[in-house]
Each structure stands twice: as C-alpha cells, then as structure tokens.
Image (tube, rainbow, N blue to C red):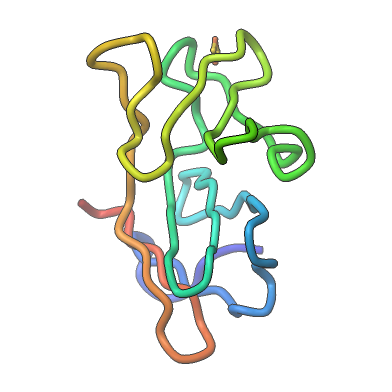
Length: 112
Ligand code: FES
C-alpha cells in the first residue's frame, strides 16, 4: 500500500489497521510504522535510531514488550511509543510523524 495525494501526506483505509497491531506503510519514500489504539494513532519512522535498520513488518508479532513498548529485533532496544524515547539511552528518540483518524481514513503527515 502507498499513500495518495501529496507525497508528504499518506491516506489509508482505516479498516487496514487492526487495533493494537503495528503496520508498516510507505508515505512518499519513507517507511512508517503505525499503531492504532482506539482513536489514537502513533506513527514513527520504521528505522531504529541505533543503527538505522528497519523494525520490520513483524513488529505486530513479537515487537512489543509486556508494557506495549516497541522492541527492536536487532539489539532489543526498547522505545516508548508515546514519547518515542529509548529506555536506558538518554537523548535517543524515534522520529515521530503527525497522524490522525479522519472519517474512514488514517492520515499520516511526514512533512513536519
Ligand atoms: S539496530 Fe535497533 S537496537 Fe540496534
């Protein structure tokens, strides 16, 4: 799936995002990891800030710890999705994007 419209904004059918599971989508040339919980959408770069490797589409299978934090499969760094901060690594943060539910669509803006 890819975004439509302006390259910096992707719009995707809401039904394609199961609650509580991560999905990876493309917006322009960026790979974005998206998690939808109720009306709350979290969209972050699908690149771990440690070594710039992708978290991968398997994040929904084993990519979260028991506190709902994102776990990188390569070296097990842990990221709080709400703040983006890496646990135990001060100053390391996921790149976050604006995202919202709009009608039956999920909109992700990578321009900011
Ligand atoms: S690349 Fe993610 S923790 Fe090392």
